Length: 83
Image (cartoon, rainbow, N blue to C red):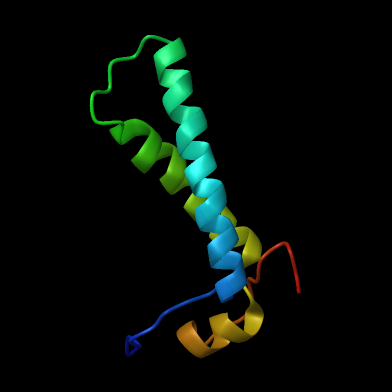
């Protein structure tokens, strides 16, 4: 399969929501590390683990069939939030 320059499976409005919620989850994860007294000087765990996990889950939830078809030539497994 030839890789296309813009492989996307969610609409623009959904990616904005994903980014906003990812920032909120980062803040919650950072506060949780402080509360649990886990030393993470550069906040790598909240950014990469919490934000990354949210990005993977939310992309699966909000993917759109027509965008999957255009990007990956298949639309069998669309997100749970079908719109």
